[in-house]
Image 1 (spheres, rainbow, N blue to C red):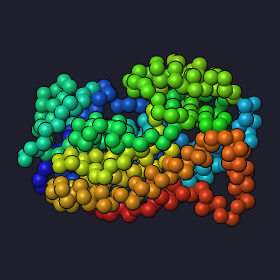
Image 2: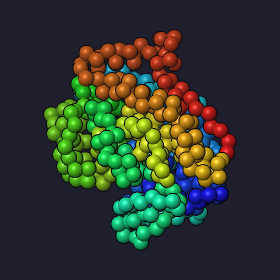
Image 3: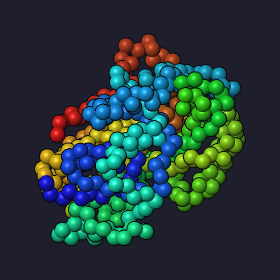
Image 4: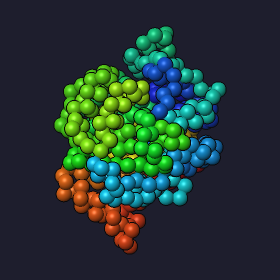
Length: 395
C-alpha cells in the first residue's frame, strides 16, 4: 500500500466519514479542524438513498435512526399563523423508505465517535501552505510544526481553505444562486411538535421547526438578494443584515429576530454552488461541499458528502494508494450524481422562496391539490430518486 499518510481538512460530515473508511482500509488519516472542538447544533439534514447504505455499512444506521427528527408535517401559514397549505414532511422533502432526517450536529458526533481511537485530530488548527513534491505534500499550520503527508484531502466546505491553497481563489469556483440563508436555535414558543411552519412574502421565507425532542426550535430564513459584501467572521454584521432584510415583516418574525441577537449557534451564508472542472490537483483532492457544493436548497448536500467520501476512500484502497487513478475513478463515480443534486437546487428555490405573491399563491394551490394528483410522486420524490441514482460498490 502506497501513500498511507493522509491529511483531511474538515470535521463535519465528509471529513470524519473519509477518515473512518481510510482507517478501515489501512491508511493513516489525520484530521485538522479550525474549530477548537466538534461543532454541535446546525440545521436538519436528510440522509437518503445511497447515503443510507453508506451509513449502514459503517454500522451506524440504528444510531442515526435513534436521532431522527421524526418531523411529520410542514405547514405554510399567513401572518396570523393560519394554515394556508400543508403536506407531510416526507412528501415535501421527497423522503421514502429508509430515508432519514437528523440534526447535522448529531450526525457529525456519530461520525466522529466512529473514528475513535484510530484517527488523529488536530483541533483549533488550520493549514497555511501546501508544497507538493515527489515524495509528498509539505504542510505548514498556524500553530503546529510543519509535517509531510502523502496526500491532502479537503473536506472543509463551501469556503474550503484547502481548495483556496491548491486550486485558487474562491471567486473562480463559487457560483451564487441569488439567495442567503440563516439558521439558529430559539425557544419553542409555538409549542411545535414534530412540525415545521413556513411563512412567505415575495422573495423571503421565515420558518420554525422543532428540534431536540421539541425542547427547542430552529429558526430558518431564506431571502433573495444581489451579492452582499460582508465579513464571513463578523457575526454581528451578519445579524444586522438579516434584521434589515426582515424589518417590518409579520407572523412571528419580530420574535425570532429578537431571539437572534442572543443565539450562540447563528449561521449565515450565501446559497451557492461549487463548480470545478477537476476535483484534484496532484496529491490534493476535494470531497463534499469543498468539491461540489450543491447548496442547502438541493436537499442533497449530506448525501453527496457521505457517498463521495466512501468512494474516494474505497478507490484509494482498490488501487493500493495509486492516487492519480483513484482520484479519476472517484470523479467518474460522482459526476452524474453531483449534477443531479446541483440541478435540484434551482428548482427547489423557486418552490421554497417564490419571488411574487402570485407565485406564492400558485405554489400553495398546488400543495393543496397535491393529494388529488395521480402523478404526485413524480413531483415530490425528485430528491429521493436522485439520491438513489448511484450504485454503492463494495470495496
